[in-house]
Structure formats: structure tokens, C-alpha cells
Image (tube, helix red, strand yellow):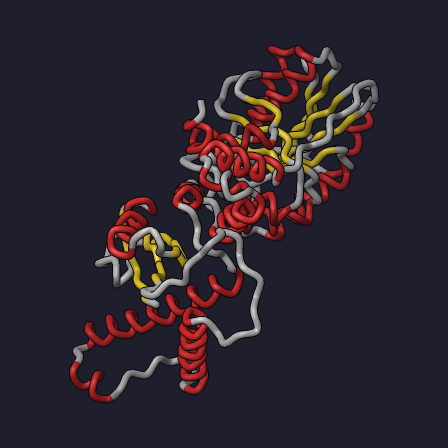
Length: 411
């Protein structure tokens, strides 16, 4: 079995290089983006790196479904994997023995200058990282040889920034579920992937109208558009649903925030209360208790300010809202979204609201957010117009945005 890395400006370009050298029988073991500053990237480049494997003496595969395990000697691929695991373990043992410091052989150290030595250390780190990635991939992947159709699906999911583990789950599920004839049918595969993505998103329950004093609070970091979104939701409740609506703002820190919401409230003839303390929040909720809906705008807080989030939590506890929407921007990275959710979880959000869809390059990270949070999605926004540019989220809508290839192919 041969294992090699291929690079390109996109995952597709790297995969094409892989197929040119290894052919269609190659299996993608790992795909990752190499960030700027990597030694292997020449100092300031960024590209996609695909790690692929090719068995030079492949077994004949009669079916794309994985065969039942037999009580025979390990296959060649398993021997290679075992060797890789052992090599990775030796790297780790060496690291622990050396107290976490990577030691180079004396001959190498003497031959290399300071800069070259650092480069060699970085290269060794890259090798160890690659071995770890391969072992981790095979640990959770029992994927048989994929059809060209599924390989393309897998690549397109990665290009939409769907997390590798989730992309693998989707194509494996498709490979195991569809029959032999369907697996090469692009329409059948696209329909399966589209439906699988849609079902991963929980939709927020529809509120039953007629009950008074329904409280909706929006929380989240700074700059995600909470105030504009509150205005949109309040407008829809009043103009479309015909409700009596009230507004409360606890965003007394941001310059102009109160004036912005007050101007909207005056135009829409919606009463507005400004609260500075949790006690004032309790009084405002009581004052508006006969209104159908009460919308609360809160101050944006950085996820790194635990004390500020705790302070915000006292306002939320005082309001005792029916709905707490954690507002997140679609142009955040997956790591940022995860960090925000982890820190704001103490506010007990029961819905996720996604803003700035129009500014996002891809939305694959929402699949990871759905899996990690297990919360329903409520609304998405794609502009600043009030009361427009907002709509309820559906799994189908998000699936179309994430799996664009399948949608565009059959449009």
C-alpha cells in the first residue's frame, strides 16, 4: 500500500492530482487546509492537502458494500495500518521520554544550521501529525472502495467546509443504504445526501398564539446583529401576526443602541422599556404582562468574558423568558462557534438563530453546531432590511445551502 499527500488550491484540485497518479481506486484518508506560516507551505501559503492511499495489488471487489469479516490473516492494508500505529506510538513514547522536547540525532544537529534545524524539527512534527491523522481516520472509518459518484460527493462536502467526520458519515451511510444500481445514479445519491443533511437540523417548535406575556430574549456575542433581528421579529409579530408587542432593551453599554431601537419603536408604535438592572427587568416584564409578545435585546458579550456573561445571566434569569435564542453569525469559523456555544451555554439557550447568511462563503460548520448543541434552529437572516431579510429555518433550506452541488445539478 502506498500513502502520499497531494496538494492544491482546492480539495478538488488536490483530488484530481491524486487520481492522475493513483487512479480511481485510491482512497482519501484525510483532507485538511494547511494554514499560513507552515514550513511545508513555504512560509506564507495556504492550500488544501489530501492524504491518499493506494493498494498496488488491490483485492477484487464484487460489491461496494463492506464484506463480512472473515477469520483469516490480516489484510495487507491492516498490516500497514499496524505499522503506522506502532510508528506513531514510538514517536509519542520518544516525546514523553525526552520530556516533550524533540531530539534530533547528533549527526543531523551538527550538520544543520540553526534555521535548518528548526525546519527539520518542523518537518518531523508534520510527519508525526500525518501519521496520527491516518491512524485516527482508519480508527473511525471502515469505508470500502467508493464509487466515483460518492468520491465527488465527499469532495464537495469538504469544499463546503463540512467537518471530515460528518462528511464520512454521510457518504458511508449512502454507500450502505443505496442498492448497487442506485449508488452510481447521481440523482439518487444527491437525494439521499440532501435528505440526510436536512434531517440533522432540528426545527424550533411553532408557538401557539393566544397566550399573553410570551417572552423572547436574544443573546450572543457583539456584532452578530441582535438589535436588528429583534426589530425584525417584533415587526413580524405586530404587522403579520397582528399581536400586541412590547420591547425591552438591556443593551445600555453600546453607544447608540438605545437610540437605534427607540427610533424603530417610535416608527412601529411599539412601547419600549430600557432596563439597567435585573430588578428593572422584572418590573418591565410585569408592566408588559398583558401584551402578546415581549422581545428583549441584550448587550453583546465576548465569550472570553466569563464575568460579563454571568452578569448577563442575571438579566436573563430576571426575565424568565420562554425562548432564549443564541444568535450566531454564519461567517464565524467552526472553532469560534463552538467556543461561543460553550461559554453561552450557561444562559440556557433553547434555540439557535443564524445571522449574516449572505456574508458566509460556506455553511458546512452548521452541521457540526447542530450535532454538538442538539438545539433547534429558529431563524436565519440575510440582510439588514426590517422587517424583511429574515425567515424561519428549515432543514431543507439549510441542506440546499450546504449541499449546493446536488441542488444545482438538478435545478
